[in-house]
Length: 379
Image: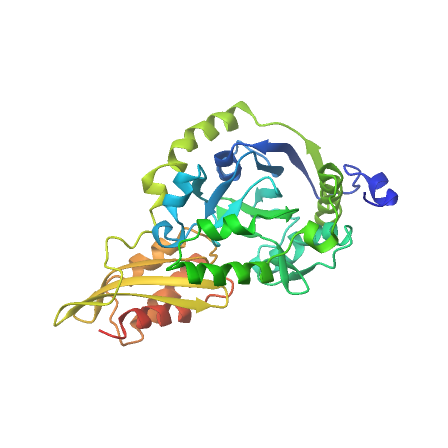
């Protein structure tokens, strides 16, 4: 049980608020809908059909959510997921692939990028918008803290996964309160080279990821935790949450988006399959190579084809974040024709960053350049 003073505080009582937001307290929904709904509302905000919204939901059945920049064939064991009836899709924001089920409660914020309640700069944004779940964890007796770029931790262990992305005129933040977590299933859905390596991942996952139940030894009432979390969002963001429902336009757009989220084109769009997956000497003047580079902001995987010391084609993937998220394609296009071994590669990447006002926490243009050099260093 939560403290009496906390239960009596309630929510919806903010005064002199900057904005009124819609609250969609949905609860358990279909796995595909947990990932479509925030994309749809972001589109609605851009088109003038939706309002700033905070969603509370969780999947009625398990799913695997793949990060926007990841290569599904390299990161997820699709055969295992099919055999165990686990739904797999890709989300419109970055980060890594994750197993999700009813053991977590999702909070999803979708609002105009220029909302006066939130900072535009992504680092400042995470710091402010993650204050509410941090405080909600503290009110459960868990000594949680914000850890840049976008984690909530307790004594070095991650206890909430969060990610943000810009879609049109809207910004999306998704995160969760992790009551329980199926460590074994998370490890099984990942693509790994062998079982020995899978065991190492399992050990590392248990050491780095924690839950409410593990930290407190208690089971809390989800409704009470939700009530406090909403109260924290209202107070810290200075907003007034008003319960609402999806509009007819939003329901229609949700249904229109469903085919996309199960399509091969969407699931495999970051595939480097059109290029070989190792450094291969095609001729005396042509090579194809791939490499992984671990930047502070996440893993980067680059597959690049070069002819006559120029980039002919390139695929960039990984579990990093980028704002705006679709600028990754602009970087790839800008690099075609770039002269390797010169400043041309870095200058082209920096040019896209400047033109798009790009932000990629923990990932720099120099990281992209390093990954490209690694991919072809053995040619």
